[in-house]
Length: 420
Image (cartoon, rainbow, N blue to C red; front, top):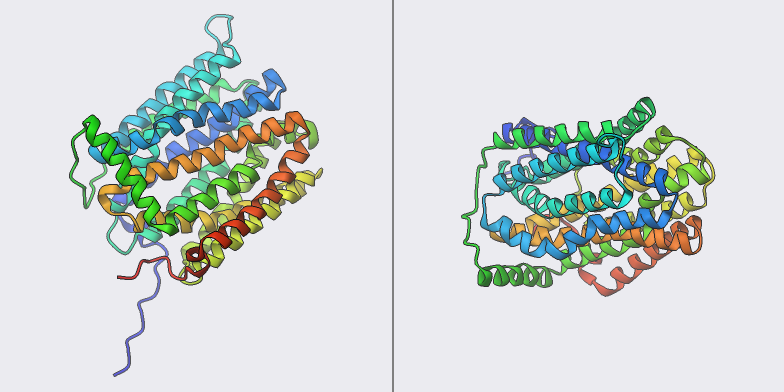
């Protein structure tokens, strides 16, 4: 008897879920706010200092709390209701962004120093330590089984949409108002709205919260780290992301390229920052219609190698349109690796460990993104911005070769779903 054909793939399966719609609304509000404020912070700090090293310090201010607190935060997330943690952290973002708006606008005639702004950025980093693991570990409990990869794909696409529109809106607002504080004020309101949407989520499955004790905290951290060590695919993919973006990320130097190399204003910077995410959004739509089913390992390694090559092109470019094209392509190929990594981390982790493993993953992500900005800023100040970006792209290519040589599991990975 012939085997019946498989049902056709439904690219909108996740968005038919009430839970996912609410989650997506909360996520878009938060992502839009953080992308707007991130672009405005870079512009504000470079306008005041004209110092690439200070831009790098802003990355350290974001990353340091995550590096110090992420592992304990993962245990906290697994010990509490993840929905409540997500709601609380969004409120925290709103309060801190309101404080940044007041600081950059000035109370009376006294505007805050750059160091005050960096301190508030560090507070946001502390809140992000709890927000990321709570959000990513909650998502698998919100959608029916079998829809998780589709939900991840749409979620990444929504993030890319926010990351495209957010910087453009921020650039327009800065040019229109002649100041960055309105961006931070609007961002604060969006984060509060995100908390409200999260309050209406109704998880389909929910892990039993544990108890928070010092002994349990230490044992829980150990359990999360042990799982990452055992699952070679998780360890190798997040290691690849760590070193590739640590070396190859050019985002931290976009204000320098905008003002000093490409000679564009805040709107131009908004387009540069949006280009990476516009490429990623386009790729998200492609993956939503044609999900990754086979040859996931080679696709992962190839996408990161192409990301490094696009970074080299951007580093050498003195044309605004070529720079935008290189960033667009870099974002598109990077999105392939992001989807693969997110699916691997969540589907190959037991539900009771998701918060802790997500916290380990967040350490790698924050180290790569934010400490990568510091590395880029330090090298740019010591040598030049072009050398910083180009050498980082070359380093990314070397990292791909190293990971492919060190972990056979990545080279041979075929299907994302773990076999039963």
